[in-house]
Image (cartoon, rainbow, N blue to C red; front, side):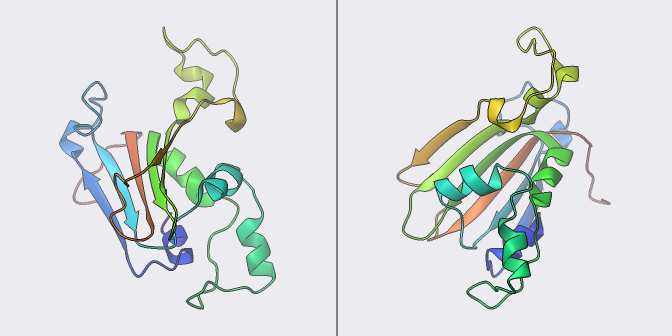
Length: 171
């Protein structure tokens, strides 16, 4: 996941483990639940990039840049490839909030529930009996003006909720 921060030319990345004492209390308000937050001040993404690259696993975007020996505007060699970071997010938790803003554009907000992909998590409100493809899952999109989370010219914030494992200070 942090490779994406590097690839976005972020000068730093912050990873926070919040409300870990509330692990597995998923009926709390979203801000009270345990979550992992990754925040950077990189180049951010446009709505088009989120829809056509970030949300499409195995997109060759970064792989093509690596193959063509392209570097970022700050001269960094691309590290990410084929959406591995997005898959890592799914491994950590079932729900995400993503906020991203590229310079000169509005902030994009995406809310996604990965449990919709898995029929093993069916319940009274989710009666799916088959696996779904990414395009079959309803994501919530918002274009925020003014920005809700990104207070600088560009960057990305990802919050991962409904964590699959409990984390402690030792981890």
